[in-house]
Image 1 (cartoon, rainbow, N blue to C red):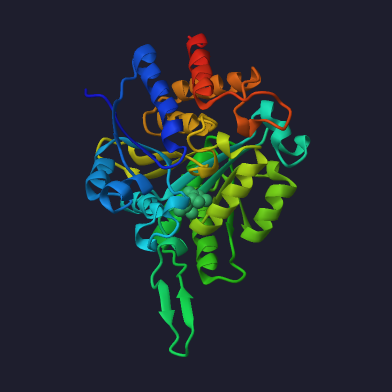
Image 2: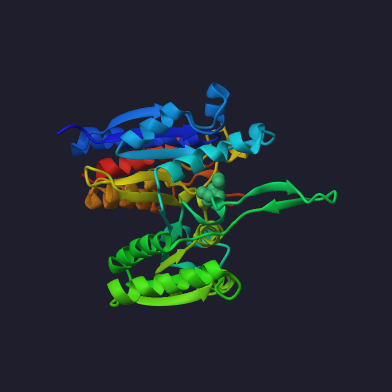
Length: 369
Ligand code: IPM
Ligand code: MG
């Protein structure tokens, strides 16, 4: 059998710096665990725009469709702020999500014991926190038509976006949430705005239908998304799996992320339907962005990207034990007190560089053998 294939799209800002560390981790698994990947690299975002005039070339899109998993760094930066909307770096990312049909976006918000002090919430509220946000990623207001900015013919303009969900789009993401819940705390909370939006009413009804017909054994509750945001900061440990639409998921996952102390620690997986080889179409990326303020300074925390690769091991390559090994290595490093700048407070001393953090994870992996 041929080796599984990975496409690294490091992108902009700190993307290349953190993906260099991921590459070392991938190579370690090849050398030490006999998990050899065929890795290729290409451009996405602003760097792709610089090279091709588009944030994702058709050739790169075709490569993404052909590999077993895509590992993405980050896209965007101030240099590209003035670009036309249609060629902004973010459009490259949205094209990947849409054309790969990655409808289920898994964003775990887990609080590492060693980092509980970094949360903006009290330690007892976040210690042991382990939430999985499942965000619908290919529909809703991000892609709904009509959209645009039009003249109102009275000297003003109208900005239009459309929130739109179909039965099938809701059911398939609900299924992935229930499947995950069965392997975790067996609880799903679905969030929408059924009190003001018809798409929210449909969302609630369809999630309930999937529950009643296919997953009656999982505990399901519904919450308005604004209340959800409030509950996330009030008592986050009440949640196990949260399932929600594209826009609410974008917002709620940033909120949940901050509970854990640092965006620099949070991975994500975006999964689609199974391909011919049975693996889901998949892209893995850190939740943090391109962080232009620290780009090129060796300050970025590579853990979110490294943990995203752990998610790839688990969800694309059926290597749950090796994923756990990698996650445990990151925990060990944190428990040993290794800290990148994002995990430090003023007066804490000299932070570890991106490379030092990556090397510490490799050392912990080595020690795990
Ligand atoms: C995210 C980001 C993206 C989004 C941006 C970069 C387009 O905020 O992945 O959460 O809004 O989905
Ligand atoms: Mg976001």
